[in-house]
Length: 123
Image (cartoon, rainbow, N blue to C red):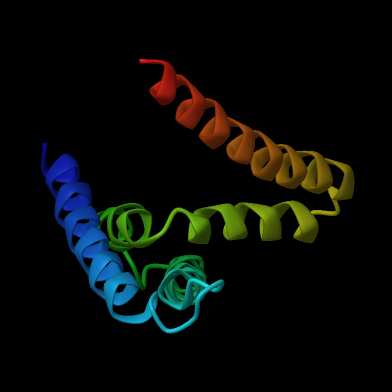
């Protein structure tokens, strides 16, 4: 139960911060979502720092990982997890899996949004 609460608290905090940053910066440019871009880059930096420190030994415990990486970064941006997973594939020399996973995630994600929008118009 404690783990669920940690993910919940981190996720809520990350989501709230993502909303505030996006609301503050997305209006600056007509065709570039600056707030979302900022959130995604900061999220990637944060998850890199968090997971990097956790791999150094006992610097970050399991509860802190749940709060910060799974909760906060997950609520702040799932792009950070997406980027970390791609980096892991590249680091392990899995270029084909990197290309397949990245391409299919982007293409199917865009297609799923389009299908969802299309279905919502029908209902």
